[in-house]
Length: 411
Ligand SMILES: [Zn+2]
Image (cartoon, rainbow, N blue to C red):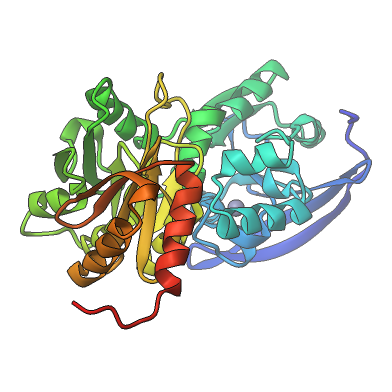
């Protein structure tokens, strides 16, 4: 990347409609060996005071289509409104910097992986074998020099940009520009804070998960949950908290702990352990739009159950991972309205609709083949089994056998 500015295209003089009126702006186009940048500014850039500066990476999804999953549209609007209101400012726009520098094709791949496979942003970039931030700011420095700007007021929460500009010899003061956190943009913004050191003011998923996880360390039978209003601080505490000590009824406990007056917006539920598939609908019923667990991978049946319940299930195993493996009840097979969960060598069989009749059937069936199980124990709403052989295989065989049975079972 060359740091010298080539001869730009321009100037184009444009009246731009921002902040309820028309403001005269000047537009330039730069080409750095195929990497294209636009500069658009208004007012006097050389009056001796720092120039309000916003650096934007292209985002077709956010800037043009107004996607709610990133804050790009909000940030561009805020910066341009500020420039128009103050009659002064400079926007540098990296036309080829979609998806933090990977390009627009990668941006589509990222959306597909996030939506179809439920991967978080960091996992997606790992899959693409790409750095989470591949952007170079050399062209920014070159354009600023070309325009004769040496002192800026950077509208950004990205400390890397600030550091880069300072190291490149510019005088920089930073002014925060933060989009309101919501359930759509939270994963993107929290990744920026945790992995890219953005100076966002809100708590991340890890900030909520870490104390929850510490509270159950060494207690594999104990699970905990928080219901949280997005953007509220950990100091204020969660909206509701619940604990379950081996009853496997955490969702019910959280429902019982919710305040009578619920806030109007969607909530986030944080869990120390994987939920049962049927619990996701309970969390959705409490007003949760997002359920976050501290694990790297989510079993397919859980992802499908989340989609059916209308909640987003988010894996957030980052700085907050458990120091020792914590065995989880993972759904491994589904058939005939039953879900089989596996934890180490034990199986649990749960009817999706809580039907006692389905459990009666299943219990009868398991007891009819005693050679397959060393133990069959009926609980209120599930059956726990200790298979004689490979438990993963046993789960699939059991559900296939149940589903293949003749329908008429006398009760
Ligand atoms: Zn975006």
